Amino acid sequence: MNTFEHVTLDRRDGVAVLTLNRPDRRNAYSLKTVAEVHAICDQLDGDLGTRVLILTGAGPAFCAGIDLKEGVDTWPEKVGVVQARYRLQQRLASMVLRLREIPQPVIAAVRGPAVGGGLALAAAADIRVADVTARFNAAFIRIGLSGGDDGASWLLPRLVGPSAAAEILYTGRFVDATEALRIGLVSRVVAEGEHVAAAEELAAQIMQNSPFGVRMTKELLNFSLDAPALRQAMELENRTQVLCLLTDDFEEGTRAFAERRRADYADR
Image (cartoon, rainbow, N blue to C red; front, side, top):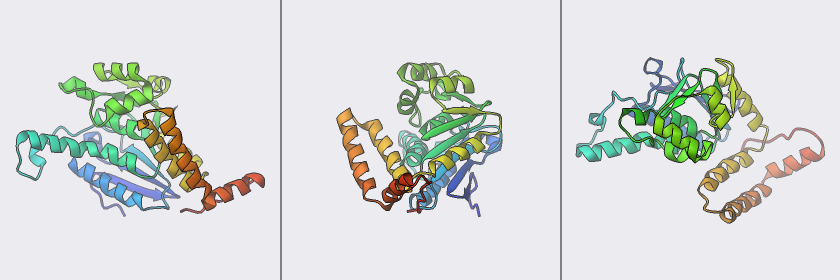
């Protein structure tokens, strides 16, 4: 049973669907939202039965970013204005890091606007699928802030390249679903309302593979994004392959390949 106020969590057949559930606020997130997402990620860290996480929004919007109605006064400690604003910013941005740290691949299923922090949340996912109504923009620059927030200045250049990222961050213009597909911000665009179904289809494909292998691949991709050179990335790959070679999953996978059948991987 869902016990959260700002999000819902639905688990079924190895897939968890985390829905930002503030449709009246276009799923803008607050400190409470961040705390609830952290709590869910803490659960997923030790949940071997959940193989993939789908992140989506309730209603016609994915996420309108940070709830601007929530100010510094919401921070419980009595500190200076600068300290309070900085700590609030750190806490709000921490949701992006937490989603990248969990062992499950994260698929963002985007419908409607993904604005500001919503763009960053979508970019933080491992895979993004969108329906035709999806629209992305870096709203920060339009309200007197810098274009980089919640990791957007790190994530976007790695997804769409530095030039396209610079245009998106400098102008704050909207990128529609067609352009998002063309520049690599999303991997597929589907009919209106089919975004979650498309994400579930991808999740099913992922779950045909070894649980440990998939988790190691996510870890490897995250490390490789920070690796300074090919040699360092290859050393991480070598480590991962040796670990996977020593698992029962590898034995089952090679046996299934030889017998021309689908591998039967146990959750572990």
